[in-house]
Image 1 (cartoon, one colour):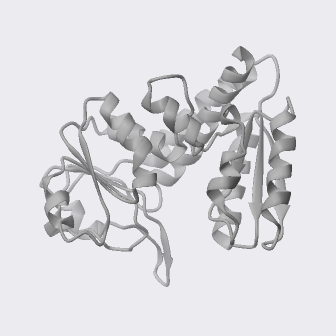
Image 2 (tube, rainbow, N blue to C red):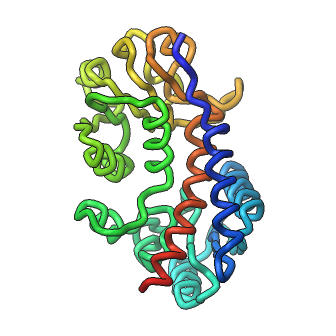
Length: 274
């Protein structure tokens, strides 16, 4: 059986370090979240982020909007938050009900984009300049480091999700291939990978027969089913083949929240130097 990469335990250690760092800062960092609509999963994720901020000593401001709020009003709020010195991080909880997420995220000051989705941050990351990377991608990389994984990687996801991961993997000398679930060559690409990262939101997409023996398997997918939260990996069959594997829940999710706190501190530092 593959060793399980415990995201909760690793995240707890990172959160404790953040709390210690925040305690000695000259001012208190602040995060503002924009939450649109009534999606239960989005509200749950925001409450977890709020709890993590409060535990770390980071101030948290929630801006709630009905699902039919206009894009113009959301951007106006972001522009106001961009100007506020007490807000170091701005996060728009995704997915949005109907508004254009790309345009809304592009209105965030890149130095306050703690989710790491702003195109300017991706551009700076590619150029090797100081930038805020995707909190999910950073969480995945921490888990890969924990497994001491090497070799080639396959990312089963959209190109948009994969972009920051590819850059971070390349920094470690890891070449990666991006493939989506509907690709007829999916099984071939997955079976070649020493590091497999899956983020498609399709429960049980990857089974044990598809995975290279000894591969490090990182499951980013989370789907609510009648049987509870399920990942994109068929855990039972893959655990017997893999060299290391993340559980769902308890793997990438807690790490994403922990790395969001890291990004808030990074944003705070970048803004003080600007």
